[in-house]
Length: 322
Image (cartoon, rainbow, N blue to C red):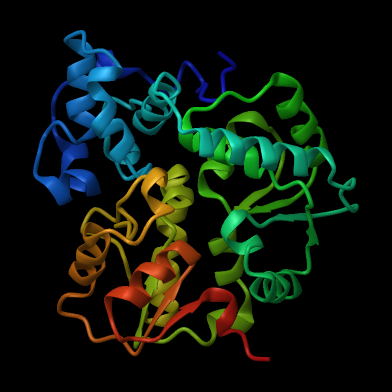
């Protein structure tokens, strides 16, 4: 199988290193929703240590949201998100998903060569909202990548294979550039695959804009997109603490500065109606708070909060004055 999930050998360990400390359980949204230790990174790692098959682990593997909250808290430096993504490759996939991957790959193959200079890789959610995408591009001033790796991002999430030729073609288009990446899983992968490239998440790039930052206030509840945040936790925890101090806004961080995800469901369930678990999670995050607005980095998170409360929910790009 083509190695989409490789990690530097010196920096990450596999499931055999799990000591059972349970720190990952405390931050795991699928455990929080079920209170079942099998539905946790530790549960998966311990099951693998005891010889469990991928088929026997299908339910928790499918349930994982890949929020990445478990990765920075693991004292053994196990690549827990990578473990889930790799194991998903052995699970059967719906024909609908294979068709979606094929269509995305065809679109990428027909995409025009990228413009010179810095590039915005918006991701599927933002690309599906042309007005917000245009506003985002205007604020950032970056060229728009017609091939933003949407098929590769979906393959990362689902464990599907991507040919070496396809990955090399995509990396050749973005290598050596400054990139702003809308998909958190793709951003984490690009950090592994590319060296000497300046990468930023969409949330960090937008929240760095003066026109947006000056409109954040102490009455706002700011929801960080978890995948990109946890993939570069050691740097971004400082960045977002500074954002909180400068603007006074509240953030979706727990006491350990881990970002609590609003979306607790795996990708396979996101095509359906929002699950009760997601709505309960969002209401729990807001418990005891009375924000004037909720400001989100992710359009998926916006959908959750719009369904779960009556507070106005804005994407970061919508904060900038016209």
